[in-house]
Length: 257
View 1: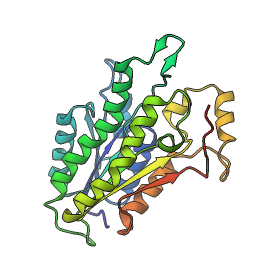
View 2 (view 1 turned 120 degrees about the horizontal axis):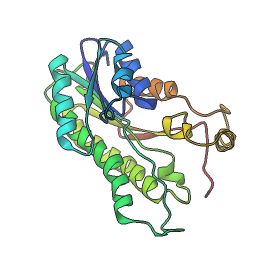
View 3 (view 1 turned 45 degrees about the horizontal axis):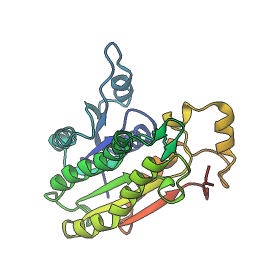
């Protein structure tokens, strides 16, 4: 699908996977609305990151757990051009065991991860699909929804109860969403990244990062945001990719811990 004279929305787009994807979408000719949390008072880190993408990038600060945020982002995108792609990259990976050193897993911690990772994804999907249904088809498609799961959806490790559950939800909703939206010529595909160089990973000690690098079979390295962005663009381009969760992981399979 040609993205010239089109728009896109990317959540979590001020860094990591989302930033690389926004960059790729802009290179393909799209106007891109980047949704990310507002900068802290006195900081402009996220706004500056989006501004560095150029005039075709538009920062929309907000929280993806608020449906109004994603609705407003989609409305902003459609004012620029018809919305053709919506990519959900916003997420958190707060660790926690059912029975941790400090006691049972707090319910509010579990629900926060699910609300951001699964709920935030559905919020964007809902708003984007509503806008896409009225598009004129391009190459047979009115639009594409791309979600982000994780290999933790399938190989969840000890301490990933909430994260694995949230990413499993994203993977599981892919097919029913694709079946439903086929009537509107809107595709739904999920990417399940393995071990990637992201802000989440950057916070780990170097020894831990080196241990994780060694787990990926080939290529023997951590994934790079550009790898994710490349697959997102390939999904947009290939009309037969629909209703599927694609592992992007260099054949990694995570052990229990």
